[in-house]
Length: 308
Image (cartoon, rainbow, N blue to C red; front, side, top):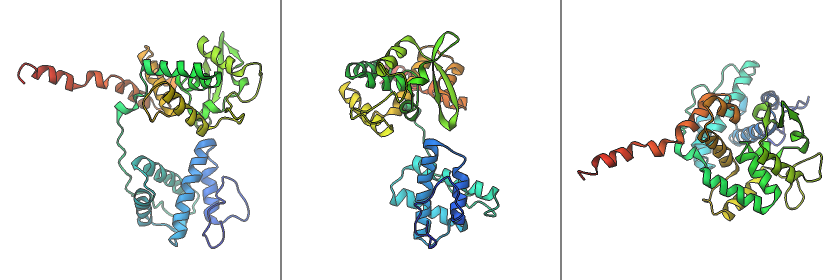
C-alpha cells in the first residue's frame, strides 16, 4: 500500500516497520486467523480498502454512512448476493472491533450498519439423498482411486473441501483404541481424530498405493489437488453419474451429515461427526431432512380430496 493510499496489494497478516496505520490495523486483525479463513478475510479487506481509496476515504476514518454506501456497492456494482454481502460486512465488523480494542478508532462505524437479510432454505441444505450419494461414490470408484478417495473424504467422512485436499498419507496411518484413524486440522485450526470404517480405509489405501508419506490427492497432471481442482472433479463426476447440475464439494458434506442422521445417529453424535461448535447448526440438518415428507401440504391435500 503506497503512501497516497491507492494500492492495497500489500495487505498481509505480517508486520513491517514501513506499514501504514491501516496496514497495521489489518495485520492485527488478520493475525488472529489461519488458512482459508485468513485468505478470505484478506480478499474482503482488499475489496473494502480499494473502494475506500478510490473514494478518498481512509479506512480508519470511515463513518457509518460510508459503510452503508459500501454495502450498496457490493450489492449493486459487484453483484454480491445477500449472503456474500453479509459475510463481507461481517469481516469489517471484526476488523473494526479489533481496531477499537487496540484504540486505533474511538468507535466502530459498523455498529448500526444495516445487514442484508439472509434467508436460509432448510430444504435446500439437504444435499444428495442416500441413493444419489451412493451413485456418486460408485461413479468415483469406477473413475479412479483418486476420485474415490476425494468423494469418500467429503461424502462419507463429512470433510470440508480444504480439509480433504490437505490430507497427507501419514494422517491416516495411525491406529488408536483399535481404530484406524484420520487426523485432520479443521476449521479455525481445531484438530480432530476421525475413526475410519473399513470401506473408507480401502479407498484411501488404494489412492495412496505404494506411497508411505506426502500428499494424498493429486490431479491428473500430477499437481497437488486444491479446492478449485476438487470442484472441477466433483462437477465432472456428478455429470458422469447423471446427478443434478450445480453439485459442488460442500454439497457432499451436507449430504454426509444428513445421511448420518438418517442412519440413526443422535444429534450429539451427528454434531461430533460434523464438528459443529454450535448444536443449532446440526439441528438444522435434523429438521430439514423430514420437512418435505412431513409438510402440511400433504395432509391438507388429503383433507380436501373428498371436497375438491
